[in-house]
Structure formats: C-alpha cells, structure tokens
Image 1 (cartoon, rainbow, N blue to C red):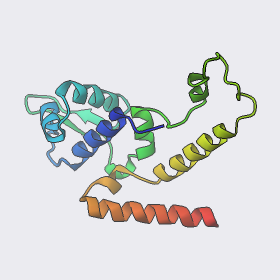
Image 2 (image 1 turned 60 degrees about the vertical axis):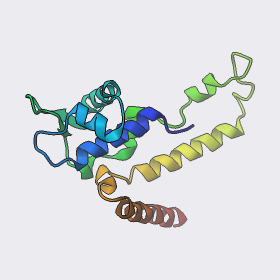
Image 3 (image 1 turned 135 degrees about the horizontal axis):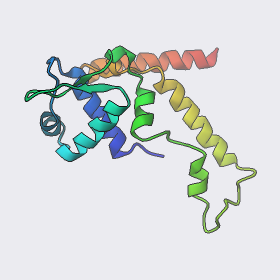
Image 4 (image 1 turned 180 degrees about the horizontal axis):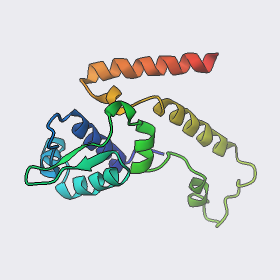
Length: 158
C-alpha cells in the first residue's frame, strides 16, 4: 500500500490545471515542462482525468485543459480512486497469498482488519479534502489540511 507515480503525477497535473487561470487552458507540453513529466505520460493522465469528468479540453491551436467543475467540488478521494484505486481492496489478499494459491489466513485474518481500518480512515479523511483545499501555497494548504485533520479527529472522539 503506497501512493503510485500515477496517483502523484495525476494529482499534480490536476492541481496545475486548477491553478491555471487562462480560459484557453494549459497544454500538455506546458504541463509536461512545469511538472517535469513526459508529455506522453501527461497525455495518458489527462485522458483519464477527462474521461472521469474532472477536466475538459479546449479546442484550437492554443487549446489545453481546464477544470470541468469548480475546484471546491472535486473530491480528492474520488480523484485518487480514478487514478489508482483504493490503497486496500479485497483483491489485495488474492495477490499476496504466499506460495499457495489460497491465503492460509483467508478465513481468519487479523491483518485484513488492519488494512480495512486504514482504508476506512484514509477514505474518511480524503473525502473531506477538495482540490480547492490544495490550491495555493504549501503553507496555506498545510493549514487547511491540518484544520481538516483536527476536525476529523474531533468527530472521531465524539
């Protein structure tokens, strides 16, 4: 369970598009140069984000990508799942069975409970984060995310 390059780069691309104020949008070459990601990979990830409905392409010579909806309505948890899926899924146990075809702990697995609890916590927290929360300087976004985390912790203690 770790953040993949596709998730990291996909979020960076979406954030770059969200920060761009030009009505024409920002082009794949411009995103590629600004983020240090190959144009081919930017193209692949923008396609996934467009199909999921987070961005739109603008036509023409100066065309590029713009947000398809306001940044405040773009849920980071949903974006992460589009880009790479959940950190934990039931398929995880099928992929890591060991030398056998069936996990020896498939009936009574205390580790699975841990992964499910981590996934639930991550989902609950990321469901509260929007793209708008990430737009801005790192220090400002850090304060916003810290506030969300504190609110999350307070709601868990009730």
